[in-house]
Length: 397
Image 1: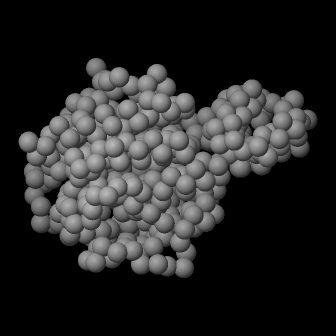
Image 2: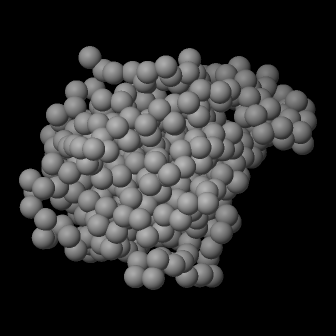
Image 3: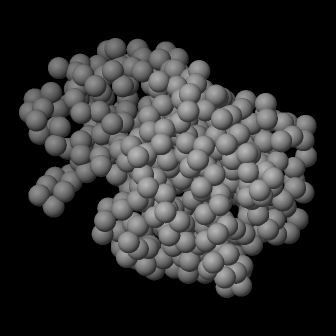
């Protein structure tokens, strides 16, 4: 029997069910951003092997405040602060504490938010930057990696987590091990997200399309709600998604949460500026990523709450643009318009999704009435007065 979060808000759904929406329909969800680069605290955890997970002991209020801030700025999916938390018997309670802090943070949020358990790679806990090249994968026995992930995922599951964000994975073998562990946890699901060294290879040098093709043959693929990339430059995402599309026979949706565009020096632990960096590096590419199959969008390193709000608003703006299409298509039969809201199947091979259909469909609505309600809710949430005026003036008939 699947476990539910303890003392969860009435607005929080079971994670596996919530995120499965992205697989069964054309919907988009907004994920939070980078934790370590966004948290406000006086604690210096830069040299701590636990990274920002150290704050679970050193400054739990800062952890909770950041979860609240991401949710208030439009994040619909919040990750626990456990990315780099290693399992130690004497510290096992920290996994439950991380879930508790996240649950308390979203309890007061008026919008539905779901919590997922952040599961970083083994290399992250080594604190030597090896998650960015995967060199440990050839040196660490399967049994050690399995046990490493098993202990952490068990603790998160015991605390109520039903969905895991397995992220920054540098190579195929660790993703396969995550799925092996997932098979031991009935009712639990995950997404698998890879760190990539360029626009066609994951961190350890394997081609991303080859990696996904191999993963597609894993017996636990049914428990995967999405695959994708994180902690990558925004400029590389579209190429990576096209490669995934070339082998994505199961039509899995994608999760995309890039960093701000800067280069990370793992040796000096410093960010190096580049030309294509900042909010616009992400926002200007959102439409393309969605068209390529991205259904969960957020941010990683150096992407904070303000950028997440802009990302959510970017979706609202696209919806407003789509509303204009309604007036242009007033004479079109609504039944035909409804069909265009969904991703074309083999039966609808000649059906080209309209802008209206693509954007409203991604929002998770199934009728004109739901579309109007959903749009109004988003605009009210961010108090976008000019957008509300435009919405009120449009003809939905």
